[in-house]
Amino acid sequence: MPVVRLIAQKFAAATVTILAVSAVLFMAIEVLPGDAAAAMLGGNTTIEQLEAQRAEWGLDQPATTRYLDWLISALQGDLGTSFISGEAVTTEIAQPLWFTTILVAISAVVSLVLALLFGVLAGLRPGSRLDRMLSGSALVVVAVPQFVIAGLLVMLFALTLGVLPAVSLVPIGGSPLDRPAILVLPVIALASFGIAWAGRLIRAAVADANTAPNVRAARLAGLPEPLVVWRHLLPATVPATAQVFAWLISGLFGSTTVIERVFNYPGLSEVLISAVRNHDLAVLEGVGILLAMIIVLAFLTADLIGTLVDPKRRVRPS
Amino acid sequence: MTRHLRALALVPGLVVALIAVAGPWLVSGDPLSIIDLPYGAPTGEHWLGTDHAGRDVWQQTLAGGRPLVVVPLVAVTLTVLIGTATGMFAAFLGGTVDAVVSRLDTIALAIPAILVLLLLLHSWGNHAGTLIVAILIASVPFVSRLARAATLQAMNSGYVEQAIGLGAGTVTVVRREILPNIIGPIIADAGTRLAIAITLTAVTGFLGFDSGQANWGAMVNQNFEGMALSPWGVLVPAILLAVLAVSANLSLDRLAERMAP
Image 1 (cartoon, each protein chain N blue to C red):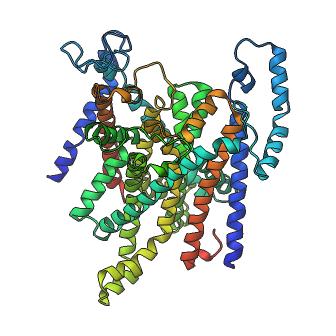
Image 2 (cartoon, chains in turn yellow, purple):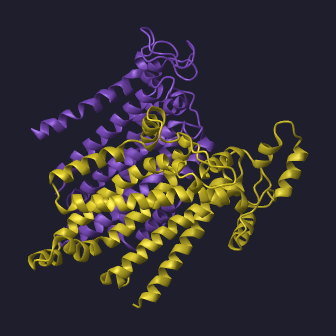
Image 3 (cartoon, chains in turn blue, yellow):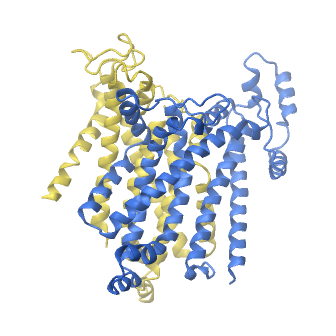
């Protein structure tokens, strides 16, 4: 089967997944107790006022109608209006989403680079002292909750040594990139898990590839070790590494919520929590669908990289 | 020698688990009652001083560990059972069952776990049941996918076909041929699931959902701002949490090594 058709197929499958996620999210948010009209108007309102507010927001329409309306606008780039602030959801979440993405992107790159280094160093000689040391520390780091790591980091670097800020204050009208110091501790807290978790998986892939016939043959032929690793071993680990990177992106967008709370970082965490509190359906759906799209896209990319790199996978998937 | 050392490494974990499970019986009075000024230093009466609201840190430490042992343990056991069953049967039966299970897994994986947790906490409140369901939604698809891939691999290796050819029934094949071969990677992965489950359980306080009961996660969160005044309210629960999580992971890792075929 031609590669182009395979790629088109994978794109179609990803689109179906995103549509399904949007429907599931809509249903899940639909069954939340309480409603936005009551949340906004407060306790002292008459039933007529509530009804009028619901009618204004279209909440008196059946759920299917509202879902289809939402979907059609969403396809045109309009995610609706926040019930609470009255602003467009896209405007309201643009900046927090961007700030969160900065944090996640830096953490993901740091994680991947160091996880590759760890994976190669440990995986080339499984069972060696270096491997046992690295794998042992990775096990510990994976296990310890990230907010605990964050707390210990703050205690050491912010309170004891006083070299880095404990709170991530973003300059007004600026971005976190204007004050890189505020990113350091959140990135270490997020990437420590990423390095340890991804490193263990990449280590397994490297150890596996290390025993492959072509790698052995290259060694026997007397190629220098760095060349063996670069030309023969690493290419074999690309599909696994791409997959691990996609998992990393999806995991980081989840765990950043907690880390942002620890450092008071102005990202999506605040938006999500207040939207759940205030029953702000439009914001919840908007954030949910954007995150789902990022995650699905990450997996799609990993899948495509895996397919393009490995000729064996270009056949029709079973 | 190393084996004894590794066994010894599990002792702190057992001690912490004991504190967590038995602690609530040792508490004297209400651990959340205000007894002194905030962030007080340790005294003979209040061993670890007081927290941000002037409550006894040691009493809260005793009272606040049980949910962090019980909830993740129950949730991960259920996750492994459900995930293994769905993934294994999807691979074994193929066809529509496989298509449906795989599609559901993909959809569940695309929804951020934290969003699921927030929605459920808001709907049902901060209870053990809410947390267990949220952990299941976030973790079952992982295990299911892993079990499916491992089962497919086991089925391609010949002996499963042989067993079927010799007339073994589905249940026998699954129990005798497939399960022993896929259980190793699943248990190794369960360590990560457990770590995530402990984090999700401990994190509810951080996300602003108070359960109204003492909880190590909530202690870390609430006393964070006054860490410079008195570190015990953060340090003690944080270290206990870390020891608990690391020992649980080490034991699962050892179990996985032993069960590898």
